[in-house]
Image (cartoon, rainbow, N blue to C red; front, side, top):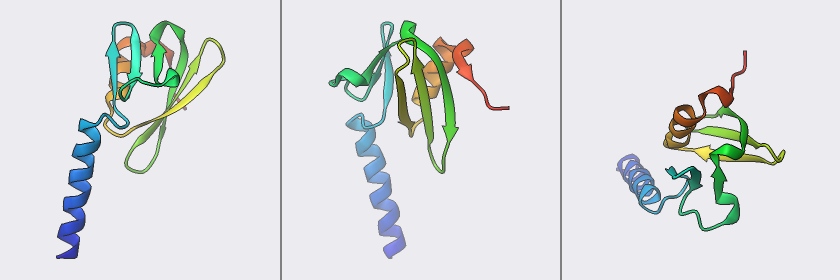
Length: 98
């Protein structure tokens, strides 16, 4: 019974996070927007991205984005929507570990 309840809570939380745009990403024009995009550091112009790299973790990915200004962002990508946008718009900027 307790196991079933835990699964229900995790499922509801994941759906609520998606609705509230927690750790979700979308492309608006030429700008990558994290969540609702209300903070200054939650928007990145694609033209400013120098490189990006996927750091796989258990259950989600961390995406490190380096800008031309040498700023670095580490964003969690729970739903793979960030990776999808970056691979579609900036495939040549991806850094792959060999």
